[in-house]
Image (cartoon, rainbow, N blue to C red; front, side):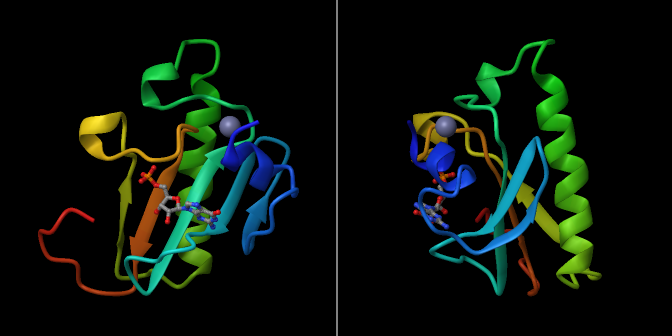
Length: 111
Ligand code: 5GP
Ligand code: ZN
């Protein structure tokens, strides 16, 4: 099983911010902003390239939850949402995830 499947199953500890039957949200272990959390579908999907009409609702739900948790985390001034897809983007964990970054003015740098 992949690292994020293990985290979503609770077999590897994380700081969980939200969980339901489809989505798991936890703090990034190496934060790149004052607030940096990851939103993942519990279902294993490799990346955005693994989305199909059948599983796309899992990604849609991640986006809904991302906005909700961003609000709970006090990101009223805005936030950035990133999904690295594949080697050129620097994807290191091959389980679809959305980074949510905020709590500072990020300017135009990427991540
Ligand atoms: P990627 O580079 O694939 O877009 O992002 C993977 C992210 O997962 C990185 O920001 C990294 O810090 C985070 N990460 C890697 N291993 C762990 C872990 O064991 N626990 C947590 N909470 N985050 C992790
Ligand atoms: Zn997985």
